[in-house]
Length: 108
Image: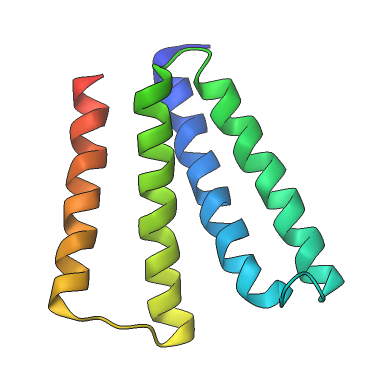
């Protein structure tokens, strides 16, 4: 796999990380079986993508980017769907995470 492809796989895996994390809200402590199944599938796809990406990318960089994108995505979905806070400090922290992810991409 080429490095550019590894980055695309990693970003896709990070979106699945957001999906499983948000799915936890609907899984209701794993009592909602449909939502729990979604969480498990999204988690497996996310981890498989991360594992594939680290065959080419440095593990530290890949993991930080994967968690960064997943965290930002989860917060943005929380804002959109669950009326979570949009305080300036919270948004500034998200910008800092995005800047770190972008920095890692170009430093790798």
